Length: 450
Image (cartoon, rainbow, N blue to C red; front, side, top):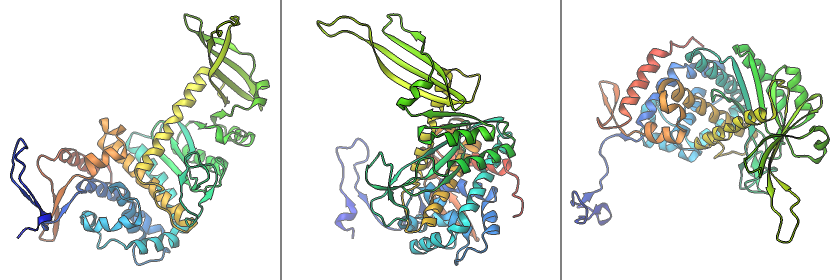
């Protein structure tokens, strides 16, 4: 007999079937994550699991390090973000898709984070760079020129039990403790170059100089010939400008609107004016610390109040200063080139869609490892969309890829020790999944032994 809460009555007002609907358990092994099979294929084709296990043998625990990394990456791509979401991988068929014997308990995973961070965080940073290089190889080689876009993000914490949660710069929730990680991307390709986890009280530029030198060395080693760095005003300092000069790279560094800069800007010149003469764009070229200081300013004319003389007063609506060592660029071009780097905000938002920073533990190393795992998930998804999905999928964000591809429903069946995924013939993602699996199989050579 069907219980009342398991039964829906007829719907005569509906244009279609008015029959009642029963809700019952069972129904076979169904998963709502059938599209994750392409993630498994890409993970194996890149040889990520063997690479991790070959270099992290000293990590303690009953589970292989590669399994723990793969489990968390799969959880982020599936849509989870905290350790209490790990049972979803067991109960919704994800474990069967990846072939895991079991999914670690949340408490076990938390202990693993605390005990393996010192070894795994630097290893995952190296692995991330290998993935970037591999993606470039698949796309035809490293870019001839690359712009490093570095920026920080603030992750609000509600309490001080999460290690590193400190009160610092927090525009979202002033006064609240936070974490303040630093991220780097390649502007032209969208690849993530890594993350440096920091407590909430860290200054925006903390650790940027040393990390920048390492990133430049990596890009040059990959064959990138022209390197430009784009930094916002939080990084402004004479020290970082000198470091970039010493590295022999070009840079665009936004300058805060300090009053003392007025003496370094140079004379203002009108670059453009509207037909009515009520709005104009002015530019100025000066010098600061032996480097070009380029300024732009938009103004509009303000009319006199009733009874006042018309003295042609002007009001500044937009102004900006950019410090750069690019000799062939003008103020307007410099400002446009700097603004192009604002896409880093979207890249950080995509990390947010992968639940980066959603959870934290009471261990500094564990929190750093969580961010390393998040950027690894981002880069894996970026390889999938840019190299193997292609077309309009290159611009689809993680939330859209998850909804339209990774969370495709399927039935898991086993026969003669062989597990299969069955998709409905009308499933919109089925054709795309098949093409992606074939492209990965033919486009990626077998990984070299670890």
